[in-house]
Image (cartoon, rainbow, N blue to C red):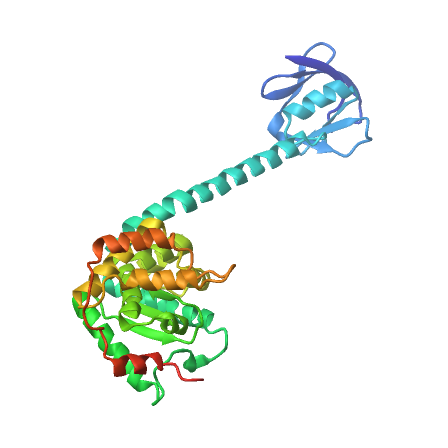
Length: 368
């Protein structure tokens, strides 16, 4: 028990009392010259009163009488300061509170990082295969408008998508004939929609729910209908494996997960983030190889050249300019080609489209 001296005013008279002060674990005890208790103040009820800098003046919070205690010994005043959190002349309590807030904030931030890095991806991987086809279709529809907006850097509006003009319709018919055969062979649980868009990159992306966007630049790179079909089949593989759904859930996180549960996909920030993820289409090596294998087998199943995917991949990779990313962030092309050739038997079959259909398809994007 720590002891010191002070000057006590009982609040009922103007008399000044020289007193002893004892600091117990829970209270400050004020004693008269005979050692009798004059007052006992719990630390939690003590308040700091205005006083000259060298004096610690204390009162009792909520006490009607104007009792006060003055401590002139700096060392003893500091000890009271440490015990009575409501005094805090040194700022130590405030500093401790700030440290606590900072520590709690760091823990909360770390928890969010752990959730984002470990929990959400694992949860997304487990949920994606369980998403009903109807929900997945609505999920794709929710991001479709945002994807088209991001693709439409030339502000073409409705003219972003090719195939609607009379001069383009034979090409659209050829594309639909190709897709119809692939759709039947793939036995998809939902209808497939494939659109060619006016983009110069040699790329294609698949949205959840079966919407595939083929870039005009990819059509320009393809030298046969089988090569184009192989890339589309690869994207169908992503649809079948629900890679887009899983990627969206991983990137947009909990807000999109809750949107799925509530049937509301209009959470703006989550939709924008999810759409950006689909456009960047950065999948792992294992995911890409699985889509390659699916696409290769699908092209072979409809009577096309199963090795065509490897052929166009090499051409795209060989024509890539330094600093330009074609077929974004996919694994090494030669690794993919080797894997494709293992499962692609040699083929001498006729192309999947005849010469007239292929010529029409290559003209599906008239000048806007």
